[in-house]
Length: 75
Ligand SMILES: [Zn+2]
Image 1 (cartoon, helix red, strand yellow):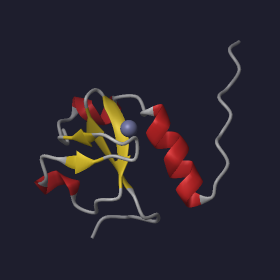
Image 2 (image 1 turned 135 degrees about the horizontal axis):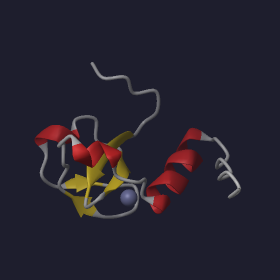
Image 3 (image 1 turned 180 degrees about the vertical axis):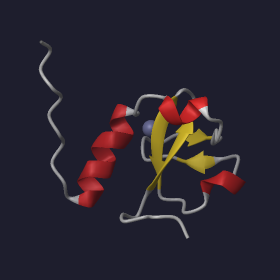
Image 4 (image 1 turned 60 degrees about the horizontal axis):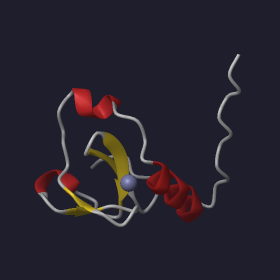
Protein backbone atom coordinates (compact mmCIF):
# COMPACT_ATOMS: atom_id res chain seq x y z
CA UNK A 1 0.00 0.00 0.00
CA UNK A 2 1.40 3.36 -0.99
CA UNK A 3 1.41 6.32 1.39
CA UNK A 4 -1.66 8.35 0.41
CA UNK A 5 -2.71 10.90 3.04
CA UNK A 6 -5.11 12.74 0.68
CA UNK A 7 -7.74 11.62 -1.86
CA UNK A 8 -5.31 12.19 -4.72
CA UNK A 9 -1.91 10.90 -5.83
CA UNK A 10 0.92 12.60 -7.70
CA UNK A 11 2.10 11.13 -11.00
CA UNK A 12 4.52 12.26 -13.70
CA UNK A 13 3.26 12.81 -17.25
CA UNK A 14 3.89 15.17 -20.16
CA UNK A 15 7.01 16.63 -18.50
CA UNK A 16 5.14 17.75 -15.35
CA UNK A 17 4.07 16.26 -12.03
CA UNK A 18 0.26 16.03 -11.98
CA UNK A 19 -2.25 14.93 -9.34
CA UNK A 20 -5.04 12.39 -9.87
CA UNK A 21 -7.89 10.96 -7.80
CA UNK A 22 -6.87 7.53 -9.18
CA UNK A 23 -5.25 5.30 -6.55
CA UNK A 24 -3.27 3.13 -8.94
CA UNK A 25 -2.32 5.19 -11.98
CA UNK A 26 0.63 2.94 -12.88
CA UNK A 27 -1.62 0.38 -14.56
CA UNK A 28 -3.61 2.95 -16.52
CA UNK A 29 -2.71 4.65 -19.79
CA UNK A 30 -5.50 7.24 -19.52
CA UNK A 31 -5.25 8.90 -16.10
CA UNK A 32 -7.62 11.76 -15.23
CA UNK A 33 -5.63 14.61 -13.71
CA UNK A 34 -6.87 17.33 -11.37
CA UNK A 35 -6.02 19.88 -14.11
CA UNK A 36 -8.73 18.31 -16.29
CA UNK A 37 -6.56 16.34 -18.69
CA UNK A 38 -6.36 12.64 -19.55
CA UNK A 39 -2.72 11.58 -19.47
CA UNK A 40 -0.48 8.52 -19.62
CA UNK A 41 1.66 8.12 -16.50
CA UNK A 42 5.43 8.01 -16.93
CA UNK A 43 7.18 6.02 -14.21
CA UNK A 44 10.69 6.58 -15.56
CA UNK A 45 13.46 7.75 -13.26
CA UNK A 46 13.83 11.19 -14.83
CA UNK A 47 10.06 11.79 -14.87
CA UNK A 48 10.00 12.03 -11.06
CA UNK A 49 12.16 15.16 -11.29
CA UNK A 50 9.77 17.10 -13.55
CA UNK A 51 8.26 20.34 -12.14
CA UNK A 52 4.75 20.39 -10.64
CA UNK A 53 1.76 21.27 -12.83
CA UNK A 54 0.43 24.53 -11.34
CA UNK A 55 -3.33 23.88 -11.86
CA UNK A 56 -2.92 20.43 -10.22
CA UNK A 57 -0.99 22.02 -7.34
CA UNK A 58 -3.74 24.61 -6.77
CA UNK A 59 -6.51 21.96 -6.87
CA UNK A 60 -4.56 19.58 -4.62
CA UNK A 61 -4.15 22.34 -2.02
CA UNK A 62 -7.87 23.18 -2.26
CA UNK A 63 -8.87 19.52 -1.72
CA UNK A 64 -6.44 19.17 1.19
CA UNK A 65 -7.66 22.43 2.73
CA UNK A 66 -4.12 23.74 2.90
CA UNK A 67 -3.17 27.28 1.78
CA UNK A 68 -0.74 27.53 -1.13
CA UNK A 69 2.85 27.87 -0.02
CA UNK A 70 4.61 31.05 -0.98
CA UNK A 71 7.54 30.70 -3.32
CA UNK A 72 10.85 31.83 -1.92
CA UNK A 73 11.77 35.31 -3.00
CA UNK A 74 14.71 35.46 -5.40
CA UNK A 75 17.95 36.58 -3.80
ZN1 LIG B 1 -1.88 18.80 -13.99
